[in-house]
Length: 363
Image (cartoon, rainbow, N blue to C red; front, side, top):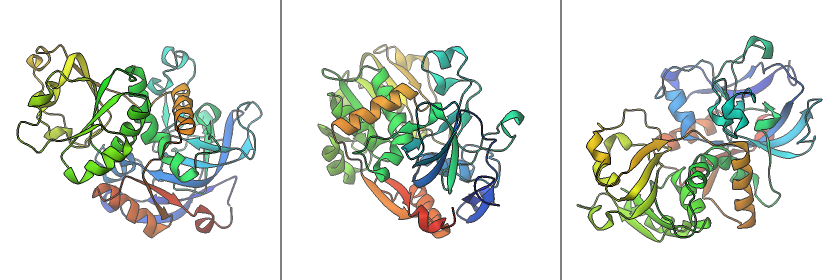
């Protein structure tokens, strides 16, 4: 049928065949008064996409169109939409709906709404059409206005796209931890998430140290704003840094392999190790005594809020911050190349899928 009745996307049919993308039509949710239809220009490729289609995070409904780092043009707005108009360049991240009525929603914590709907792979209730949400490797996406964000003019779309998830996921915990001048921060991992974390923490005025097992990433870490690079492959790497870090943001995808006491021992008194990398495997064994030497704690978070998204975009715009992006034209082969590159840790440091007009010429 085509737009607006159906959208078209590159979809995986099975988690057993997760690199095989097929272009096909799917039915979007029912259009409602606060919805916005977006004609997609580009979409970032997130580690979440790979964890989902491989089954690393469990079963997912199939066929599935992933992608939750979407930039495009608003082509239709609902009658009650006030923040976006047709023609605006907008973004959509990893969440596409919440109830906006519960305590988390009313305290700018809508990313913790118990009724939240993820941008892909989540079921909409019957009153919204009863379909499975499909993501941004597609011609269009239909999003609630509260989860649609106008993009500053001076941020190129291919750079803005990965900010919608990777950017917000790292910016939010740094902001909530009060990172800024006078704070010493450790960023663990230099990848799709970690490279944003270094960029943000440095721009916020903190003294930034990078912890990584990949010494070949030292130059990139320092280019992004790190003061010092610490190779965690080195024997007793942690000893000189005891009680050093006020806040540690762990973006790595291999926390299950960490010597946790070594990492926790580098935290200052009451310091926190905060996790946004979500590995497929369980964390190492945790014993209560790990926290008693410095009163440290360990925790995590899920993306961020609408106000935090706009604060992040403002920071990136005003300071003209530049992430490290590689682009791949979207196609069945392009999607395969992108997810394999993320899976095999070949990307430096984030992919954005482009050329949507060529892939979807009839929209």
